[in-house]
Length: 291
Ligand SMILES: C[S@@+](CC[C@H](N)C(=O)[O-])C[C@H]1O[C@@H](n2cnc3c(N)ncnc32)[C@H](O)[C@@H]1O
Image (cartoon, rainbow, N blue to C red; front, top):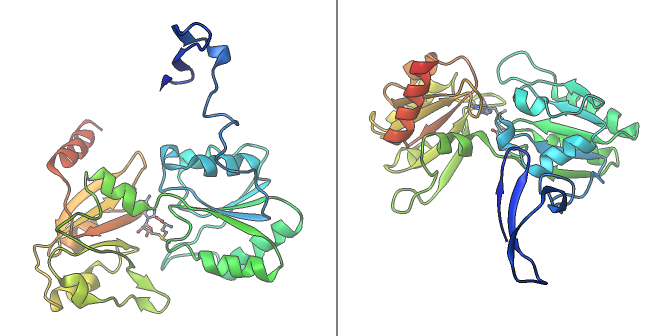
Protein backbone atom coordinates (compact mmCIF):
# COMPACT_ATOMS: atom_id res chain seq x y z
CA UNK A 1 0.00 0.00 0.00
CA UNK A 2 1.33 3.45 -0.86
CA UNK A 3 0.28 6.76 0.55
CA UNK A 4 0.92 10.45 0.37
CA UNK A 5 0.05 12.80 3.15
CA UNK A 6 -1.62 15.95 1.90
CA UNK A 7 -2.61 18.88 4.08
CA UNK A 8 -5.45 17.03 5.69
CA UNK A 9 -6.36 13.97 3.68
CA UNK A 10 -4.49 10.83 2.98
CA UNK A 11 -4.57 9.54 -0.55
CA UNK A 12 -4.01 5.80 -0.40
CA UNK A 13 -3.66 3.26 -3.12
CA UNK A 14 -4.21 -0.34 -2.11
CA UNK A 15 -4.76 -3.83 -3.48
CA UNK A 16 -8.17 -5.14 -2.45
CA UNK A 17 -7.70 -8.74 -1.21
CA UNK A 18 -10.98 -10.03 -2.68
CA UNK A 19 -10.45 -8.86 -6.25
CA UNK A 20 -6.72 -8.22 -6.51
CA UNK A 21 -7.61 -4.87 -8.10
CA UNK A 22 -5.65 -1.73 -7.37
CA UNK A 23 -7.94 0.95 -6.11
CA UNK A 24 -7.93 4.24 -4.27
CA UNK A 25 -9.18 3.97 -0.72
CA UNK A 26 -11.94 6.50 -0.02
CA UNK A 27 -11.15 9.01 2.72
CA UNK A 28 -13.73 7.60 5.16
CA UNK A 29 -11.98 4.20 5.09
CA UNK A 30 -8.49 5.60 5.60
CA UNK A 31 -6.63 5.53 8.86
CA UNK A 32 -5.11 8.94 9.51
CA UNK A 33 -1.75 8.40 11.18
CA UNK A 34 -1.83 11.90 12.68
CA UNK A 35 -4.76 10.85 14.83
CA UNK A 36 -5.09 8.70 17.88
CA UNK A 37 -4.56 5.22 16.48
CA UNK A 38 -0.78 5.31 16.25
CA UNK A 39 0.82 3.41 19.12
CA UNK A 40 3.48 6.06 19.69
CA UNK A 41 2.92 6.95 23.30
CA UNK A 42 0.62 5.71 26.02
CA UNK A 43 -1.42 8.57 27.50
CA UNK A 44 0.31 10.21 30.42
CA UNK A 45 0.53 7.69 33.22
CA UNK A 46 3.27 9.41 35.21
CA UNK A 47 2.50 12.31 37.54
CA UNK A 48 5.10 14.46 35.77
CA UNK A 49 6.24 14.06 32.16
CA UNK A 50 9.38 15.93 31.17
CA UNK A 51 9.04 16.82 27.50
CA UNK A 52 11.52 18.24 25.02
CA UNK A 53 9.75 20.78 22.80
CA UNK A 54 12.45 20.99 20.12
CA UNK A 55 14.07 24.33 19.33
CA UNK A 56 11.07 26.17 17.93
CA UNK A 57 8.90 25.01 15.07
CA UNK A 58 6.01 22.60 15.50
CA UNK A 59 7.66 20.55 12.74
CA UNK A 60 10.45 19.77 15.22
CA UNK A 61 8.12 18.55 17.96
CA UNK A 62 7.84 14.78 18.30
CA UNK A 63 4.48 13.11 17.94
CA UNK A 64 4.83 11.80 21.49
CA UNK A 65 5.40 15.32 22.78
CA UNK A 66 2.36 16.58 20.88
CA UNK A 67 0.19 13.91 22.43
CA UNK A 68 1.57 14.60 25.89
CA UNK A 69 0.50 18.25 25.51
CA UNK A 70 -3.00 17.16 24.53
CA UNK A 71 -3.28 14.90 27.59
CA UNK A 72 -1.88 17.38 30.14
CA UNK A 73 -3.78 19.30 32.81
CA UNK A 74 -0.89 21.68 33.48
CA UNK A 75 2.09 22.65 31.33
CA UNK A 76 5.05 24.31 33.04
CA UNK A 77 7.27 25.70 30.32
CA UNK A 78 10.52 27.58 29.91
CA UNK A 79 11.27 30.65 27.79
CA UNK A 80 12.84 28.71 24.93
CA UNK A 81 9.68 26.91 23.90
CA UNK A 82 8.73 28.24 20.45
CA UNK A 83 5.47 30.06 19.72
CA UNK A 84 4.31 27.36 17.33
CA UNK A 85 4.62 24.74 20.05
CA UNK A 86 2.96 26.97 22.65
CA UNK A 87 0.02 27.32 20.24
CA UNK A 88 -0.46 23.54 20.35
CA UNK A 89 -1.27 23.58 24.07
CA UNK A 90 -5.05 23.17 24.26
CA UNK A 91 -6.87 26.21 25.70
CA UNK A 92 -8.26 24.26 28.69
CA UNK A 93 -4.71 23.37 29.86
CA UNK A 94 -3.21 25.60 32.54
CA UNK A 95 0.05 27.04 31.23
CA UNK A 96 2.67 28.28 33.71
CA UNK A 97 5.69 30.28 32.50
CA UNK A 98 8.85 29.42 34.42
CA UNK A 99 11.42 30.98 32.09
CA UNK A 100 15.03 30.71 33.09
CA UNK A 101 17.87 32.58 31.39
CA UNK A 102 21.63 32.02 31.71
CA UNK A 103 23.27 35.10 33.32
CA UNK A 104 19.96 36.97 33.17
CA UNK A 105 16.77 37.33 35.20
CA UNK A 106 15.50 33.93 36.13
CA UNK A 107 13.10 31.92 38.22
CA UNK A 108 15.13 30.18 40.92
CA UNK A 109 15.50 26.47 40.25
CA UNK A 110 14.05 25.75 43.68
CA UNK A 111 10.90 27.72 42.74
CA UNK A 112 10.57 25.70 39.53
CA UNK A 113 10.97 22.42 41.44
CA UNK A 114 8.38 23.56 43.98
CA UNK A 115 5.89 24.51 41.26
CA UNK A 116 6.24 21.15 39.48
CA UNK A 117 5.79 19.18 42.70
CA UNK A 118 2.94 21.35 44.01
CA UNK A 119 0.98 20.97 40.77
CA UNK A 120 1.54 17.21 40.60
CA UNK A 121 0.48 16.75 44.24
CA UNK A 122 -2.95 18.19 43.38
CA UNK A 123 -3.42 15.19 41.08
CA UNK A 124 -2.97 17.23 37.90
CA UNK A 125 -1.14 15.58 35.00
CA UNK A 126 1.88 17.82 34.70
CA UNK A 127 4.00 18.31 31.59
CA UNK A 128 7.30 20.04 32.23
CA UNK A 129 8.05 21.46 28.78
CA UNK A 130 11.58 22.53 27.94
CA UNK A 131 13.08 23.96 24.75
CA UNK A 132 15.17 21.56 22.67
CA UNK A 133 15.92 18.27 24.40
CA UNK A 134 14.97 18.34 28.07
CA UNK A 135 18.08 16.28 28.87
CA UNK A 136 20.60 18.72 27.38
CA UNK A 137 21.49 21.69 29.59
CA UNK A 138 17.96 21.59 30.93
CA UNK A 139 18.55 20.90 34.64
CA UNK A 140 16.49 17.79 34.15
CA UNK A 141 18.17 15.80 36.91
CA UNK A 142 17.53 18.48 39.52
CA UNK A 143 13.84 18.46 38.69
CA UNK A 144 13.65 14.66 38.65
CA UNK A 145 15.25 14.56 42.10
CA UNK A 146 12.60 16.96 43.43
CA UNK A 147 9.83 14.85 41.88
CA UNK A 148 11.29 11.63 43.30
CA UNK A 149 11.74 13.19 46.73
CA UNK A 150 8.02 13.98 46.73
CA UNK A 151 7.26 10.31 45.96
CA UNK A 152 5.87 11.14 42.51
CA UNK A 153 6.33 9.18 39.29
CA UNK A 154 7.83 10.67 36.15
CA UNK A 155 8.53 9.93 32.49
CA UNK A 156 10.83 11.59 29.97
CA UNK A 157 10.10 12.37 26.34
CA UNK A 158 13.28 13.70 24.73
CA UNK A 159 13.17 16.34 22.00
CA UNK A 160 15.33 17.53 19.13
CA UNK A 161 18.16 19.59 20.51
CA UNK A 162 19.02 22.94 18.93
CA UNK A 163 22.43 21.75 17.68
CA UNK A 164 21.05 18.95 15.51
CA UNK A 165 18.50 21.26 13.95
CA UNK A 166 21.16 23.96 13.48
CA UNK A 167 23.44 21.46 11.72
CA UNK A 168 20.57 20.52 9.41
CA UNK A 169 20.03 24.21 8.66
CA UNK A 170 23.60 24.55 7.41
CA UNK A 171 23.45 21.33 5.42
CA UNK A 172 25.98 19.47 7.55
CA UNK A 173 26.18 16.36 9.64
CA UNK A 174 27.57 16.76 13.13
CA UNK A 175 29.82 13.77 12.58
CA UNK A 176 31.59 12.81 9.38
CA UNK A 177 33.82 9.87 8.59
CA UNK A 178 37.41 10.97 8.29
CA UNK A 179 36.73 14.30 10.01
CA UNK A 180 35.53 13.81 13.57
CA UNK A 181 35.23 10.66 15.64
CA UNK A 182 33.55 12.45 18.48
CA UNK A 183 31.10 15.25 18.95
CA UNK A 184 31.36 17.50 21.96
CA UNK A 185 28.28 19.10 23.45
CA UNK A 186 29.56 21.87 25.66
CA UNK A 187 28.24 24.84 27.54
CA UNK A 188 29.81 28.29 27.50
CA UNK A 189 29.00 28.96 31.10
CA UNK A 190 28.93 26.95 34.28
CA UNK A 191 27.46 27.62 37.71
CA UNK A 192 30.59 29.55 38.73
CA UNK A 193 31.14 31.55 35.52
CA UNK A 194 32.77 30.71 32.20
CA UNK A 195 33.05 26.96 31.71
CA UNK A 196 36.46 25.35 31.34
CA UNK A 197 36.71 22.54 28.78
CA UNK A 198 39.27 20.15 27.34
CA UNK A 199 40.72 22.99 25.27
CA UNK A 200 43.69 21.00 24.01
CA UNK A 201 41.37 18.28 22.68
CA UNK A 202 38.99 20.78 21.13
CA UNK A 203 41.82 22.68 19.47
CA UNK A 204 42.92 19.67 17.40
CA UNK A 205 42.16 19.97 13.66
CA UNK A 206 38.85 18.37 12.62
CA UNK A 207 37.24 18.52 16.06
CA UNK A 208 33.57 19.47 16.18
CA UNK A 209 31.66 20.90 19.12
CA UNK A 210 28.16 22.21 19.60
CA UNK A 211 28.53 25.09 22.02
CA UNK A 212 25.42 26.12 23.94
CA UNK A 213 25.14 29.35 25.93
CA UNK A 214 28.32 30.50 24.23
CA UNK A 215 27.43 34.05 23.20
CA UNK A 216 28.64 35.85 26.29
CA UNK A 217 31.72 33.67 26.46
CA UNK A 218 32.72 33.99 22.78
CA UNK A 219 35.89 35.96 23.50
CA UNK A 220 36.86 33.60 26.30
CA UNK A 221 36.30 30.56 24.03
CA UNK A 222 38.34 32.21 21.30
CA UNK A 223 41.22 32.99 23.67
CA UNK A 224 41.30 29.56 25.30
CA UNK A 225 41.14 27.65 22.00
CA UNK A 226 43.78 29.77 20.27
CA UNK A 227 46.03 29.55 23.34
CA UNK A 228 45.84 25.76 22.98
CA UNK A 229 46.78 25.83 19.31
CA UNK A 230 43.51 26.09 17.39
CA UNK A 231 43.87 27.87 14.06
CA UNK A 232 42.21 31.32 13.90
CA UNK A 233 40.73 30.08 10.61
CA UNK A 234 38.80 27.24 12.27
CA UNK A 235 35.19 27.60 11.10
CA UNK A 236 32.56 28.41 13.70
CA UNK A 237 29.01 28.78 12.48
CA UNK A 238 26.65 30.79 14.63
CA UNK A 239 23.03 29.73 14.18
CA UNK A 240 20.58 32.09 15.84
CA UNK A 241 16.90 31.41 16.56
CA UNK A 242 17.15 27.88 15.25
CA UNK A 243 13.86 26.51 13.88
CA UNK A 244 12.08 29.85 14.14
CA UNK A 245 10.92 32.22 11.41
CA UNK A 246 13.85 34.57 12.22
CA UNK A 247 16.52 31.86 12.07
CA UNK A 248 19.88 33.26 10.94
CA UNK A 249 23.14 31.62 9.92
CA UNK A 250 26.31 33.63 10.53
CA UNK A 251 29.40 31.92 9.13
CA UNK A 252 32.49 32.90 11.12
CA UNK A 253 35.92 31.69 12.10
CA UNK A 254 37.51 31.54 15.50
CA UNK A 255 39.12 34.90 14.69
CA UNK A 256 35.80 36.58 13.86
CA UNK A 257 33.56 34.76 16.36
CA UNK A 258 33.08 37.65 18.84
CA UNK A 259 32.06 39.96 15.98
CA UNK A 260 29.56 37.43 14.60
CA UNK A 261 28.04 36.82 18.01
CA UNK A 262 27.70 40.57 18.57
CA UNK A 263 25.29 40.67 15.63
CA UNK A 264 22.83 38.33 17.33
CA UNK A 265 19.99 39.14 19.71
CA UNK A 266 18.30 35.75 20.11
CA UNK A 267 19.52 32.41 21.43
CA UNK A 268 22.32 30.96 19.36
CA UNK A 269 24.19 27.72 19.12
CA UNK A 270 27.80 27.80 17.96
CA UNK A 271 28.85 24.97 15.68
CA UNK A 272 32.60 24.84 16.17
CA UNK A 273 34.56 23.09 13.43
CA UNK A 274 31.93 23.13 10.69
CA UNK A 275 30.90 25.67 8.10
CA UNK A 276 27.67 25.96 6.12
CA UNK A 277 27.52 24.19 2.78
CA UNK A 278 27.32 26.76 0.04
CA UNK A 279 23.79 25.77 -0.98
CA UNK A 280 22.49 26.07 2.58
CA UNK A 281 24.10 29.48 2.95
CA UNK A 282 22.73 30.70 -0.39
CA UNK A 283 19.25 29.75 0.80
CA UNK A 284 19.69 31.76 3.99
CA UNK A 285 21.00 34.76 2.06
CA UNK A 286 18.07 34.58 -0.33
CA UNK A 287 15.62 34.44 2.58
CA UNK A 288 17.23 37.49 4.17
CA UNK A 289 17.32 39.42 0.90
CA UNK A 290 13.62 38.85 0.28
CA UNK A 291 12.49 39.41 3.91
C1 LIG B 1 19.64 26.26 28.78
S1 LIG B 1 20.24 25.78 27.21
C2 LIG B 1 18.92 24.74 26.70
C3 LIG B 1 19.29 23.81 25.57
C4 LIG B 1 18.11 23.01 25.07
N1 LIG B 1 17.67 22.09 26.09
C5 LIG B 1 18.40 22.26 23.78
O1 LIG B 1 18.45 21.03 23.78
O2 LIG B 1 18.57 22.93 22.75
C6 LIG B 1 20.00 27.27 26.31
C7 LIG B 1 20.90 27.39 25.12
O3 LIG B 1 20.52 26.46 24.12
C8 LIG B 1 20.70 27.03 22.83
N2 LIG B 1 19.38 27.14 22.21
C9 LIG B 1 18.23 26.69 22.68
N3 LIG B 1 17.22 26.92 21.81
C10 LIG B 1 17.77 27.55 20.76
C11 LIG B 1 17.27 28.05 19.51
N4 LIG B 1 15.99 27.94 19.16
N5 LIG B 1 18.14 28.62 18.68
C12 LIG B 1 19.44 28.72 18.97
N6 LIG B 1 19.97 28.28 20.12
C13 LIG B 1 19.16 27.69 21.00
C14 LIG B 1 21.37 28.38 23.06
O4 LIG B 1 22.75 28.18 23.04
C15 LIG B 1 20.87 28.74 24.45
O5 LIG B 1 21.72 29.66 25.06
